[in-house]
Length: 561
Figure 1 (cartoon, helix red, strand yellow):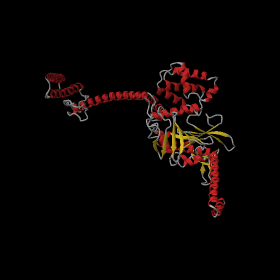
Figure 2 (cartoon, rainbow, N blue to C red; figure 1 turned 90 degrees about the vertical axis):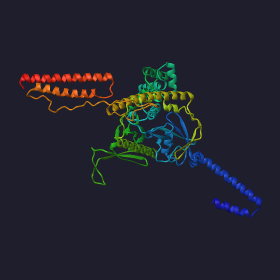
Figure 3 (tube, rainbow, N blue to C red; figure 1 turned 30 degrees about the horizontal axis):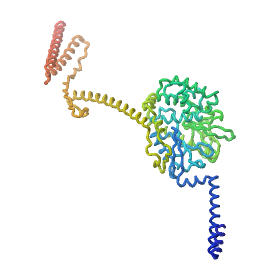
Figure 4 (cartoon, rainbow, N blue to C red; figure 1 turned 120 degrees about the horizontal axis):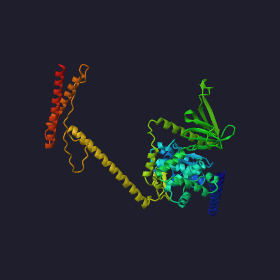
């Protein structure tokens, strides 16, 4: 109607004077521009239309890393979540990416994980103005860090555990919190030096969850308890501190569980806990002991519909009749309810955790045996300064990274390098490793030379694998003369005359000795001393053979044989 009216007005005015025409058109344009500007401001305020327009060209996101760095990204519309995870993992040189994911807090306050096969901007990111806040964290937990192959993964699990304890995502008793805080001090600062330094360090480290501070009279009391444990940790290396910290955290019942608030059919609120073990239903006041626990091997199906999440559990003790098959089935359906967005998040987490369980089960034969915690501690200590903490020294201020279909183009500072002091430390570490490797190489070369010399003594020819330095000639090796011989099969003493049989056996054996000594004495190219010694040995062998022969003759004469 508005367009028809404007066209009619324009036709009417067209027949008038040029002045009236220009005046009218300018007035209409001002009116139109003011109305559009007002509508645009209203939509920007209430609906975040500015961000919606921006999404056609990409959206600014800020990824919080586990080492407290923040990564500024411009995410393009076609970028997949898997590509974003690869991009973030590249900043840690992370190889075992399968344990990690990227999450955000939606407008309802729920924790939502990005689905790797979906585009990043297809998720319901917060619509408030400014960059969308994302978090890089551990998504899939395992029984122990001993199953992790790379030390970078272990360090990230350690940083993730510290963050979860400090934020209260893992329920920890106060005394355990103090022990964990002491291990954090040992890992970061080394052995205890003074109370003043320990208190100063505790203020800058993620040591105390809010619940612990509320349970005790003062911060000074908590610091005193931590210092008592810190003094006992004297002598622990950095790697040992990390390993002991993870052992304590992994033993906690709430470690590795993602909790969601739901209700049952009666409207009673519960916690639904999803982990690598299965799905558990917990009381609202108790996240430790589940009322019900459904292991992944028991579950037959997972599905959601609007505000309902349901699982089909295989119960062998219960028999029911299916309407479709008219057969016996042991399936029990468990249902929980929440708002639509949370139910979808629960279903996505359950499906991904179940797939993670299946993948580990299928590849269990290929999984190498778990490493010992002592080896992991040594591996973490050998690096001197942790790789992850070195990355925090990178100058990432005002760093804007264009992320489009997995490409990485930095428009920030080009020289994101560590400080000169850290360079010197890195060079010293590399030189120490080089020296150790050279010593080990020399040891192996010596072993190889000995093996080649033994082979040459047996074959008379030096193998080509014998290591030679530049300009070195292979040593001359003389082949050993073979002295092996075969005895008669009927040399064992018989029952008729064992004494005579024993003498005859000794005679035959000594006869072989004489033949071998004669062969050795007649070997050419011998030095004078060796030749003289071998002739003496040959003469002694002949003399002993003659003595055995005389003994046999005397025995036969004596026995009349």
